[in-house]
Structures are given as structure tokens and as C-alpha cells.
Image (cartoon, rainbow, N blue to C red):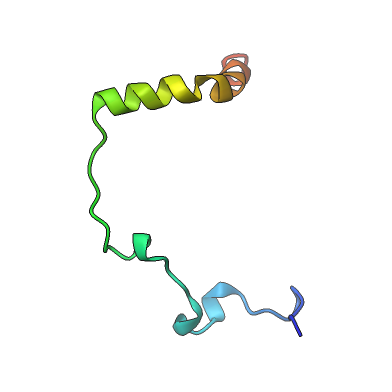
Length: 60
């Protein structure tokens, strides 16, 4: 039986063993800074998706 929202304890009161952390967040993956070329490619690829948000924010 799945507990309802009212029966669940807040995360701060759960035992630490209940916290699951994916490997990519546990420090086992090396990180690196993106190059300017990688950033520019990403911005071009996502411009159509984010442009409505930018237009909305510009009007504020």
C-alpha cells in the first residue's frame, strides 16, 4: 500500500538511508567548463524554445 501525502514524513525527518543519489551527483563524474563554441551552439539550438520567455521578460 502506498502512503498518502499526509502519511509521509517530510524529507528532513526521513532516515538518511532513504535518500537515493544518482551516480552523476555523487562526485564520480568529472566536470569541465563548456567552451565558448559549445555555449554558442547550445544557444543557437535552443533559441526558438526560449525566445517566447525572453520576449515576455523584456516586456516586464
